[in-house]
Image 1 (cartoon, rainbow, N blue to C red):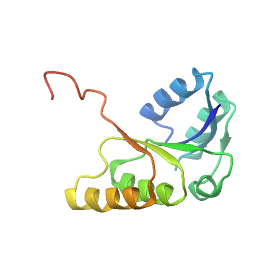
Image 2: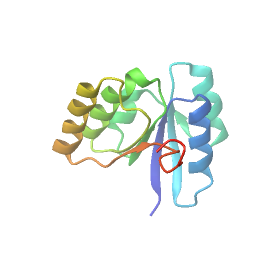
Image 3: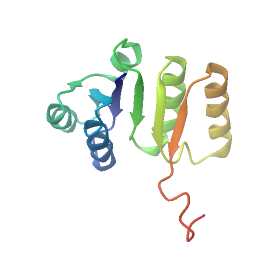
Length: 129
C-alpha cells in the first residue's frame, strides 16, 4: 500500500520531509501547499506533486496523510482541521506554545480518533531529554 501525503509548508523543513517521502517506495507526495506560491510550485514540481490549497487538501479523497511544516502558530488549528477531515497527521514540533491550546487540540484528536505524531527529532538526545 502506498501512503499518499500532502505537505503543508514548503520551507526548509518541508523540503526535508518531501525528500523523505520521495525516497520511500511506499509513499507518494501528492500535494504541496504554501503561502508562497513559488515555493510550493518548485517543491511540488520536484516530486511530481500538485500545488493545492489547504481547503482542497482537506477535502481530497486522494490524500491519506498530511505533514505540517508551517509556522508554530498554525499547528494546532491545522491539526484539528485535518483530524476532523479524517487524515493521519505528522506535525513538526511544537503543537503550540500555550499548554491549554495544546490540550484543546489533543482533545479534538482524541475525539476524532485521528492518528497524530509530533516530530521531536532529539527526544532521546541525553543532552536534551
